[in-house]
Length: 227
Image (tube, rainbow, N blue to C red):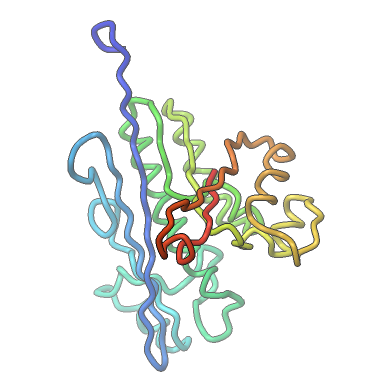
């Protein structure tokens, strides 16, 4: 309350990842921005939130050389579990995208908490669900969310998926949520709606977004779900 009037001042954290690839390496670039009510981003990665914005998957000897070179401290060569992102890494591309995005977004959320003031923190993407089966990522995210709560912030994640997305249908995620479903007919919206009450997570949705026009976009735009 300011001057007897309610002041709505949300903060939004938005991350994005892209991949660059060559014959012997892959690079995963992450960018994160923190927005308030102003016209410009309040903070961002790379920049004020830190320099580490590019994960490199390459042979072990390349990664160890990079790790020893202080000029390349913006490169991420290990996952949050300490394992090198080399040819022997037990990880998929999606795992690496999750690593860099979750770590960077969580750092941004902690910076929001440090500024204080309370309010609402909106994250573009899931706060919990996708990381439940990856305990090291879940710990990183939960630490950031707890810091927000201590600073008086409520955290809300907004997830958008194509209707038939099955990111939550891996056996690891289903086991972590104790959800039994025939994976041939599984989709993210179903898993989210079943898992949320079991896990004590407040869920609005899932909602379906369908294009109803009569032009070609009706056929080219798949249905979306969000929660």
